[in-house]
Each structure stands twice: as structure tokens, then as C-alpha cells.
Image (tube, rainbow, N blue to C red):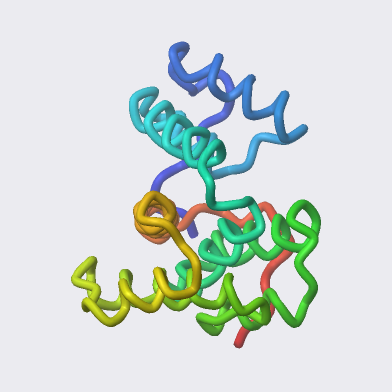
Length: 179
């Protein structure tokens, strides 16, 4: 059972409504996470701003989904596992083998594997990645700017994992299979 309610439109602060309308227009649906964040217009705007800005970065959407899956699994976030399994399959067009590899902290793509492994290291070490870990992701062909974006993808996904775990957000995507 959820611990923080998912507000109805009538219960949502007026300042959050334009943000939620934009999400609805972009996705065709308003996920429970967005509605939940709508309790705080500042929280919703902050999430959407960081997410939108990272979406314009040099880490492609497929790798962003790979990282999201790995971090959701690392943090045991059922909501994010369901959401990103759905998004990975239907928007990023990742196959089931890749999604499973991502959840296990890897990728079947050699370059993406370095990004996913680095993301897991950042999460495991709480940001204190070793020189070896940073060099490995550089050796795989990631620029310093892209390394910073990977760290921000970890932070963004950890943020949503924590929000959903604290709130026990009702899952409104098909459930992800247990590992």
C-alpha cells in the first residue's frame, strides 16, 4: 500500500497542473510518479527539468534506459523496474536479452557495457569511483562530458527510485519479472 497518495487532478496544486499537462501531451499518459511528484510543484519541476536536460545530452536514449534499468535493479525499485522495462522495450527498442543484461549491470553492446558498469560502480561506491573505473569508461570511448552525464543519469534514477520506494508508488506499468 502506498504511503504517499497519488493525488487526483482536483487534489493537485494548481502550479503542478501545467507540468502534468505537458507530460500527458508528450507521453499520452501521466504516470503515477509524475502525479505523485505533483504534490510539490518544485519537486515536479526539478525532476522534469533534469530529465529533459539530460534527454538533450550526448548519452543516447538507449544507453539512458540501460542505466535506468541497472540502477532500478540495484536500488530494488519495483516501480522503476516496471517503467523502464516498458520504456526500454517499447521506446528504446531494446530486446529482452539486453534488458536482462542491463538489470544485471551489463550490456550486450560493448560500449554501452562500459557505461552501465560505470553507472553501477558510481551507485555502489556512492560516487567514489576509482581511477581504474573512470579510466575504463574513458577507454571505452566516453568523453569527460559523457562521463558526467552518466553520473547525472545515476543521480536522476536514484532520485526516482528513492521517491518511489519511500512513497510506495502504485505501479501503473506492466510489472517487471523478478530476477
